Length: 170
Image 1 (tube, rainbow, N blue to C red):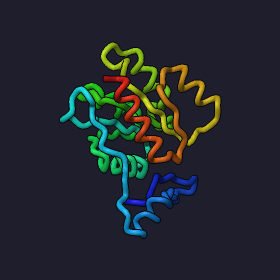
Image 2 (cartoon, rainbow, N blue to C red):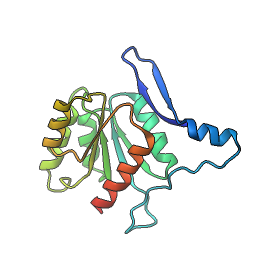
Image 3 (cartoon, rainbow, N blue to C red):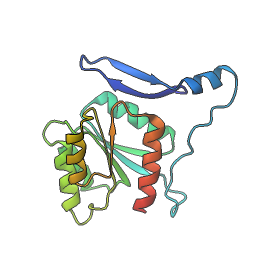
Image 4 (tube, helix red, strand yellow):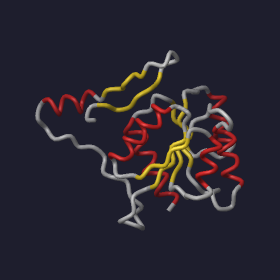
């Protein structure tokens, strides 16, 4: 939806939308909204990116999936690290968006296992989490995460990060 830049979930479960006021103003003024172009592999122009979204929050998975699909990407979702590792046995995404705090297997363990796997070790991982402290960021980088974003994420920052890391990965 135009004018919505992202979303976050508060501790009490309420969903808070993050508005893009400039997009809303352009829409109200009748000017065309110029969003980001769909992200494709440059070497494979016809194939959209396959992004795996791993988060225990149904709302985060849905909101993020809709954002990515609006920008021409295909999306796989997993509710925790165990589900993600199972999906990775059958699918090879171009990039992974990974939360830290999840039941059964957290994001740090997922990232560690991916970096130790010969087939997956080059998979770009963008960690998106409510943990914004330096301690968590340092640990994420130590296990091999490529980028660390805090929730609520800015839609344009996430899309630019996906575009960057997917090109590096090609």
